[in-house]
Length: 212
Image 1 (tube, rainbow, N blue to C red):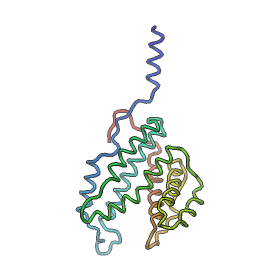
Image 2 (image 1 turned 45 degrees about the vertical axis):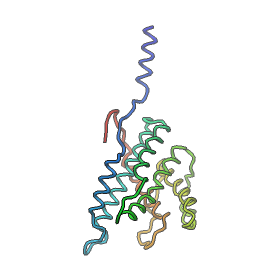
Image 3 (image 1 turned 180 degrees about the vertical axis):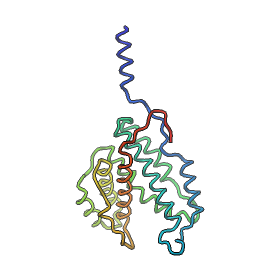
Image 4 (image 1 turned 135 degrees about the vertical axis):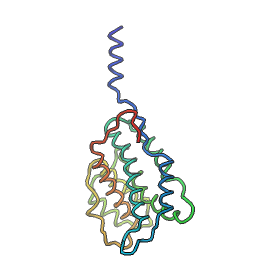
């Protein structure tokens, strides 16, 4: 009997401990929106980028990092695929649902469109079926008519999933001098943000009970 109890205890210790990490919450989102409402989106004299645009970039980085922490902990064996998917759904519900009224409506709408690739790519990665030929995927994505958003997103999500899996992209495919970037270009920019976030999370692992 003592041997059986010892085996059960050993098995429990071998199981990954569940985490209570808060990846993203409504309060965090609301605080960002409030900050953006107070920001100036007109560049100051002599400046190319406005205060609001700088904040929006930080906003993007914050959400991207939060989402990819879920993926990183899945990679570390802290979460099952089902648990990681559930937590991904929780963050997506906060980030992609609804628009603020007023001047920020168009800005946040565009912001949500660019983040579509983040959530779609992470789901594709968790499912485990994605193409890894970055060069061919980028070429294909750039050739797709902008009206075919679903097809373009599918291609971009494959690129994003490959990046989450360890591939390198997409700085060399992003042209700084493009005056009117397509949505696919915007997705490549987000995937580059994802790539940088994954590098920063290379040694990331939370102890059970830690919170953000």
